[in-house]
Length: 148
Image (cartoon, rainbow, N blue to C red):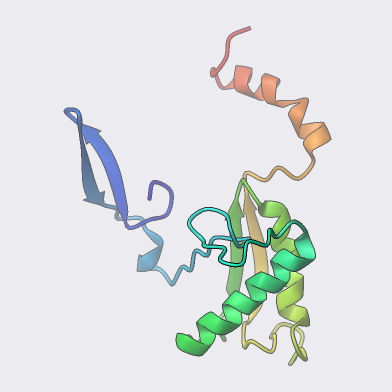
C-alpha cells in the first residue's frame, strides 16, 4: 500500500485513515503483483513442496503467467517490465530469461507468452552482499540514522 498502491494509510490522531494516492501506478498502467516463489507471502502451497532453487522458481513464475494470461487476456505488445524492490531481486533475471526461453522466441523481444519484455528493474537491490554489507554502517551514519 505505502509504496505503489492506490491507497495510503495515514495515522491521524491515533486512527489509521485510508486516503487515495494521486501518484499510484493504476493512473499510468497495469500492475500485477504475484507472490513468488510459491509458498511465500500470501501465496498458498497446497502440495507442501518447497521451491528452494532459482530454476524451479522461474518455472513456477512462467507457469503462473501462462495460466493468468489464459484467463485474463491483456495486450502485452507494449513494453513490459519485471520489477522488484529489495527482497527476492535475485530471482528476476532468471524470471526474465525463462519468459524469453519459453517455447519459441518469436523475435528478439517477444516470448511465446506474447510478452514484449523490455527489461527488468531492481529497486534498492542487494546484489553484492560482500561489498554492500561493509558499507551499510557508513551509509546509515551519513543519512543520520545512527550516530558515531
